[in-house]
Structure formats: structure tokens, C-alpha cells
Image (cartoon, rainbow, N blue to C red; front, top):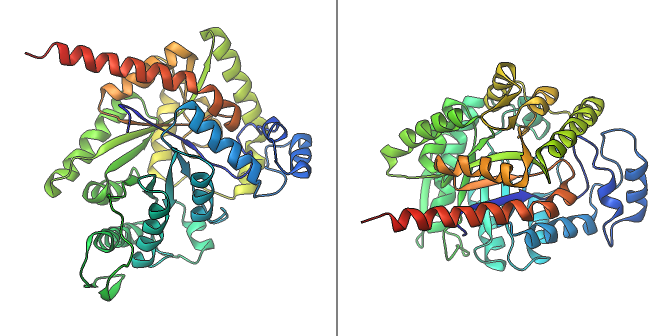
Length: 387
């Protein structure tokens, strides 16, 4: 992994708060009928085929060419199967990895462990697990899970214990717990190198479980002081288990050649988002109001529209903080500087995605280059200063 790990986003069709309608039409091999429908759509609702293989391939290729390490394959109750999407991304690229989101509770942990290990065997070292316990009760219920959040976090804790044993154990093992009973479990496929476990969640239950299991703990894009506070909390939760997790922050950069141009673009993104957010909410039928992460972002948005140097909260406010929705606005150099402010706190992974996913993935290559060059330079200076 590079000094700073960059993660982008995978998608099987062009979807964005702003519509991003132009993206599909420019993709070689994309479904032409779907492209036409998408381009003609005046709403924020995604149009055309849910699976557009040409678009996914182009998006993955764009991330690889821009220097990203991985792309996130996200999850909801309506999403295409993530394992299939991840395999397509890995097959159509040479180096790019995937961060495959998975909700514990729907697949037995021994089977989930084999599914991840099998994917990793075909694409060694390019697979990571992103554990999403689930913050939207209604979305969980659509797949048949009626448990409450505290129960889900207890289940996640037990799930990850069994997954890791399945990956690590060369001998049959038994497990009997609150949610799972296993007798003589032994996987015929195990990863040669550990599959990294990323973990998301802002509640105290999330911090408790993530502190025990996470290799990388993921935060949404809060102000620097908030991220520093959360890093301290997770480290304190991890310490009793002898763990020292890394940290990730998710942000939505809006860079341009000049700061003025970036803010012009940001205001246009906000205008389109406000026009289309109702359509997107109806289409995806998701409710983030009970998620602690969303509540934190909305609290910051109420305090100020801009935090630190250029963390912009207006999109979070307009969307009800639906997912990672805070932006960094400025010139390429300014946005890179702000990203490095997070790495200075101890963040090693930056999950960045744009409002026109394909075009922005291509454009972010400049940010990736600037951040990595400056991170290496800072590390060399620090090394030179040591006695």
C-alpha cells in the first residue's frame, strides 16, 4: 500500500445527487438505450438498466489509471450482488483492489468467510471486507432482519469472531454463541495473507465492536477536531485487545483550477442536489435519520457551512446527511492540503468520490498525485530530522 491509501467508488450505473446524467453517454460499450434514457432524464432518479457493464468497467479503469488503491462496492437492500460486482471490477483491472461492503446477519459467517477467501484466491491481496452493521431499520427489514441496532452490533461482534477463525484455523473448530452455533467448522479455502477488515459506525456500540475487530476504522468527513476525538475513542476501545487500527475518512472533493472556480462548481452542485434530492430519496427509500454518523454531520452543518479551511457542509444539510456528504472545496492544491490535514491526525485512508462519478474519478488523479508527493516529502523531512 502507498503512504496514503485512496479508495474510490464502484457503481453499475451513473447515479449521483446531481444526476450525473452525462457520464453514461461517454462510456464505450455502455448500454446505448440505457444511456439515452439517462441522458434525457430531468430528475435525480437513476434511469436505465441497473447493471451497465460498460459503465462499471470504465469506472474501475478510471480509478486504476488515476492511482486509486481500491474502490468501495457499497450495499443496500436493493443493490446488485456485491460479490459479483467486486469480481467484475477485479477482472477488468490489473492492480485495483475492492473494499466489499457486507452486512452481517444474512449470510452464515463460515460461508461469508469462504466467499471472501475465494474471491481473494482469484485476485490475491486485492480484497478487503467492509463491515456495515446497518443503521436503517427499514432497509434491514426489507431483507428480513427485524432486529434492533444493539442486537445487530452484538451479532456483528460474534460474526467477525467466526469469520476470522474460519480464515485462520487449519483445524476444525466449534462455536456456540447468542446468534451462531457451529460444529467442526473448517474451510478448504483460506487467505494466504490476512484480508483487511474495515469497519464503519459512529455509535458507542460501533466503537466497542469496531475497536475489537477493525483493521481500519472508517469515519465520515467531520471537521478535524471531530475526527481527532473519534480516533481517540476508537484507540481507547481497541487498546484492551492489543489492537492498533488504522483510520479512514470519507469526503467529497470539489476541486478546480482556482478556488473561485471550485466554489462556482460547488454552488451548481448544491442547486442540482436541492432540485433532485426528493426523487433520490423516493427511489432509494433510505432513512439515515437514526444513524449517529448522519446526526453528527447535521450537527456540524447547523454550526457552520464551512469548517476548518474548506470543509463544506451544505450538501450534507440538503440531503439529510445521507452517507458521506461533506465536501472539500478549493483549488487542487488547496484540497490536497486539506486532505493532508487529515493524514496529519493519523488518517491513512482517504475515501473520496465525486458528484459526477466517472468524470471525477478521472479528474482526481491530480489530487492523488499531489497528496502522495507531499506525504512522501513530509515523511522524508521527518526522517531527516531524527537523530
